[in-house]
Image: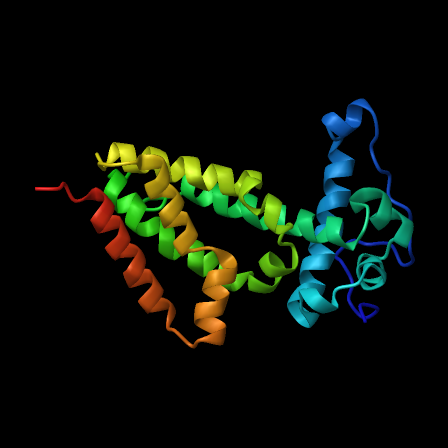
Length: 214
């Protein structure tokens, strides 16, 4: 499946990339970081072509022109590879709302950042929907994923800065639940709702939580 895809600068045949252990696992060497990025890049390209459901370790190894053993040592199994891809995409989104340009990133009033956050989440997850659904953890751990915790903390900070009233933590949980990936998938792909409708609902929720009670 991936035999016709070459990565720039790759050798002509499969090779076994070095996998760091011990101290280097805590502080990866530059070559280990490059090798990991090469594998994830190959996997991301394949996934864009065939979808997350059809992504195989054999195909990724062929596309990256490495031995399959390299993939298994690096990621453990297919689920580990999907989690690594998800982590990569999540880090990109985190950088956008933590250090990126306003209104999503710093530099805009808290209320403007709140308004920008929900639509940005939905667009990001719709763009990577297959990956987010394929890498979903078991139900009992779904709310304990570190990326979700960071989003929740971010919303709580913005709600406080916007002088929202009431239970800030539950308000943040409610906002986050409204852009939950399986829910957005159900509403947009299965029920045919326009993303604009969901974005408008997010703005309504933000207004309700940040408008002082008179």
